[in-house]
Image (cartoon, rainbow, N blue to C red; front, side, top):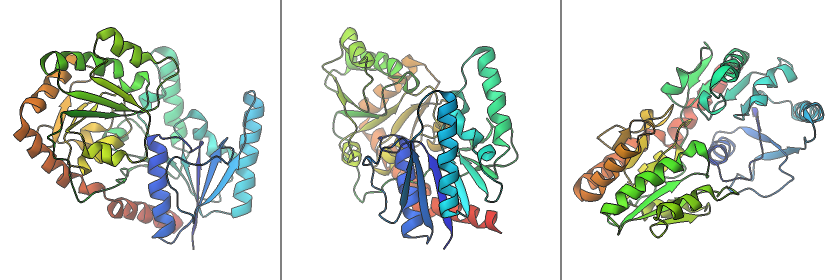
Length: 359
């Protein structure tokens, strides 16, 4: 039985990376006959938000303090874990800069994969600092045996010959679908500037001026400053917007909704898109770098809108609100088109990649 070691950050949160890793690692352990290990950082043996297979072996390392103490603890923890389990393949699932240095921390005995879950723009700001960071990351990407991204658009961001596209697998594919008759619109994602909730709320203000009986539910970890909660109050739309904490049974929330919105400035993929589509819910998303354009077939199973164009975003929401038949046709096509992301299809691609690297 081949051993796989995933190196990641803490996985007790409710983010997309944690969800995807729980699906993928559990499938490999339960159905693909791999011995799966996950090395988590500063998890303090806490419980996980998502369910991981009992067959998965979790290793927890602690790394804190200044940059030098952190690096020493991080490197020591990785080397100790690798020595104890002797994995056949190492896969790094961490969108932070430190992950790019893993090939320098370990020997070249095992193939090392990097799994990129975010657009390169997520780490690179504007100006000279951003350009330096982008160049550094692109050069470091070449050090891995394979550099795996989630969409074709993602692959164009990386100037490296070892790049390969493998999308995320679906979390679920229920037999039933949303009726698309409830006056509910759903958004799923943590409160942050990158998720574009400022753009979303301005769009929603336009929508509810015309359709005040429709409601918007936003599921995600709320920031400490309650930035967007305060913004909804300031815009006078707080009675039509509900801010909800993350929930495990998000599937039911999709099934109760009639439209999903994705207002992000950047995305590595857009897991919420395929989850909503699996529930027969049409999606409206900004065509941001670098995921939604690969998932949504514009004007067929959803709408793609010019990035950060709140006016156009509102217009598309109104189109689906006012045209129930269009909504239902798009929802039906969405459920059919999203089958390409079923776990059997996606994990087969990972299995093939692992076997090719082990030859």
